[in-house]
Image (cartoon, rainbow, N blue to C red; front, side, top):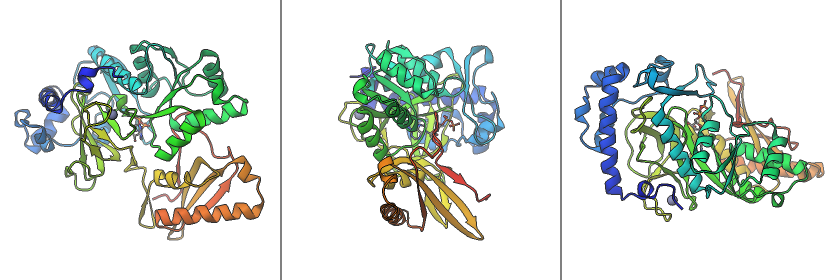
Length: 432
Ligand code: ADP
Ligand code: ZN
């Protein structure tokens, strides 16, 4: 099932032509209307007419989060404010928030992309879609909402929070599709169990989960517990919101909608473009956005691209599940540690719950990594000796997987703070 077969399954050759045409047009537009782009291109000695092939975009300067800060709030918009019909922004956990503007057409584009994503997850006009992403400035809620309405589904705009009510709505309204962060999906499951409701009591069939990194192990955990098909949806405020990429039913990578976004993978240290298949930082150029086009935006997300044809028939490139953000990575005694590595190791151990927290401290000059791990009720009530054995096993697994010594603390189920939005996985107390 496709939402827009012509676009989603367009032969690559045609798709490349379309991309090139749209890139050229975007570059001309930002050069003409956004002073900051013009200055950067002038400094780099590139003119819009220098872009003649898709490869030529590597001569364009990158855009970074710093450029967004320097031009806060609307400096990178390419249309007058009278054309802007919506403003969204990121949470802004690190300083000023990231601001995105949309024209009327941008909102339509965004809805189309989320419609494609929802269709990949099996939703249709007959579905009941519960949107438990936060509504408001955060793009998750409204993004999913407009896409679900676009396909004609019945939308329940429950927003994040009030988890018992989420469960009640799911049961009473017969929700078939749930959109929220993967960590919140698991939290909803816990609350559901505590209300003595089981997945069989619901009509839930699939979930559209994203906004934070999660592993394949976490996917199986969610699929088994909730008895649904769990799809990974990727996006970010700067690029448009959710719906930049999604995995199809093959679940072997997320299709990036290349008729709107042109991806590249670069070495985050040198900025050099890496050949297809290499792992590195995802860089995206938006090629249809009117209000807030971005040229070669450094997402900080680490992944790789696969141009092989997909069994589903869609021709658009697939990105691997995001491993984490280059800025989420912690360096402990010189070793790079991603929360996702810890997660995939932990979830291989029976009795371990997918809730964990990495705490890094510096004792004198030495970094200490402590990992809090929730275990199931059953395990937690076992005898002390058994818990100690499990602790040892987990520590061994983590130490061989990560390559550094760690401390492990097994904690009671429910004791690590839950989030209704993005999960917090790292506490860095080192003041670096
Ligand atoms: P904020 O940074 O304020 O949370 P966003 O909501 O725009 O703002 O977050 C975008 C970031 O969320 C992405 O750059 C990426 O790191 C992460 N993200 C979004 N979707 C996914 C996903 N499916 N898998 C992994 N990470 C994701
Ligand atoms: Zn596919």
